Image (cartoon, rainbow, N blue to C red; front, side, top):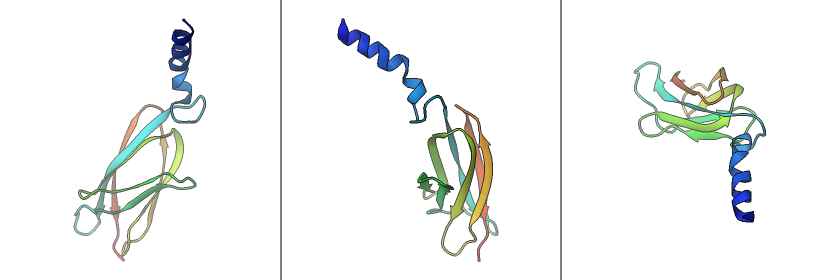
Length: 107
């Protein structure tokens, strides 16, 4: 019976700690990065949340995903060699997916 109670306790409160921040909910940001002049997708773009160590890179099709990030106001930075760095500010909603389409300008 003791093991059943521990199991129930852990899973009944897991939403409070689902992303490591007590009482907050995670959100999901994804999108595609394009070159502004040719509209071709850009692989290898670093997508990061300013002020954190959360980042990813766009894949061969220019797509990126940042799953389970804290909800609220964030600033995303997009950078790739030979392109101007781009930043956007957005407010993410708990438990909601945000999709973006980003264009980078060549230097």
